[in-house]
Length: 210
Image (cartoon, rainbow, N blue to C red; front, side, top):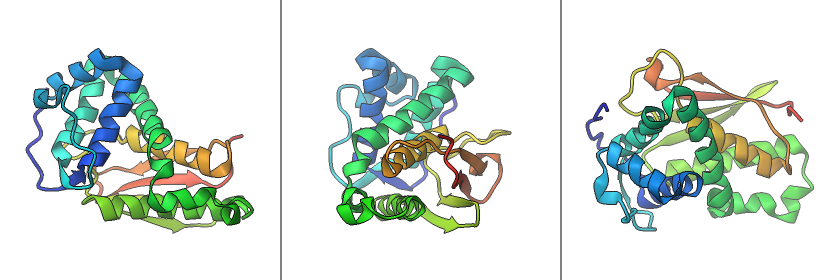
């Protein structure tokens, strides 16, 4: 298991707690405890970070938890699990979080789907940018949106030959599903800091898959 040195960049305790609660929901208590022990974070067993917005959970620890999913469940299984954890993270917590709650307002429900999608992506980017050291932004192109992250906690300190931020892909997929009223969208990680890119970038195609 590669130990990633602390970064000095932080997620809020709340984001870290949501991550661990999502892993626990999918793998059970024994599963999340195994992940924490393997990640060299045994101090968090039965002691998740407090439910507050203090920026106190180092990006390196967040990244090691995601890395451990691949170590324990294998590359394919770990990536699939990271996708599920990302989707669960949004479904259980972020959809009712701050500005995202506005996506369910009547005024937004009657807007065209593309306007709702853009609003939702911008709201997610705002939440992460304001509540952590992760800086997120959204750009609209003719056929897609680009969701970009600077200083990504999901892949912090890792080096790979392919994009690895499956947790964020899952989170974005579930967010888009909720905002659109049940439609699925194609989300590809087109750039990844772990492969040497300056940012992590996710291409979200405007045309729904179904």
